[in-house]
Image 1 (cartoon, helix red, strand yellow):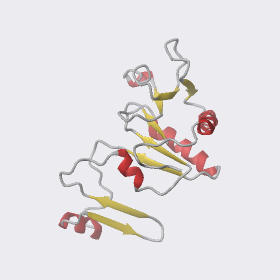
Image 2 (tube, one colour):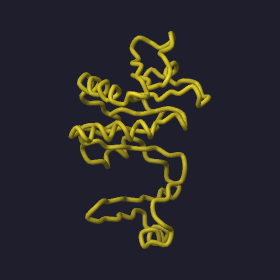
Image 3 (cartoon, helix red, strand yellow):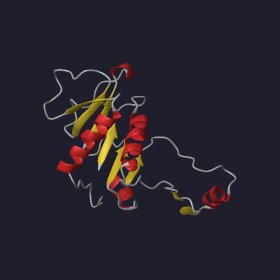
Image 4 (tube, helix red, strand yellow):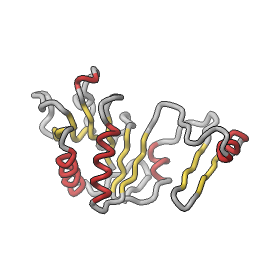
Length: 177
């Protein structure tokens, strides 16, 4: 498991798209958990599943030959932890997590100074690498990999090496193959 973190607009999702395409193309099963601070609308409001959810169902599963989705209404409950979300996923070779900056898990930061926000790596000991479009600064610790944002193949190569050295990373009680 590896979290992809960075400020909004830094390119996290774009990088993830490139990584997932390459990793899945190489035969790896990749899961994604994406955190959002916003309300999530997954279906048009007048569809049957939305009507049933709005009527009071705790969870609604939509199942077809092409995909399955489960929508769970929290209705004032505490947001489930990352570990709880991971328990719902099928086993995978790699789970990439977008967001969850506060979690104590290995992270790859997407850092672009033009976003106007400070880098996270100086303050977060869990950041194992930075993907950026600027040269490595002098203050980047020796244990932090510095990768080129414009070279997704290089990031995938680094990721394969990182996975060989960290074959199983656990969060809470969730197990990721």
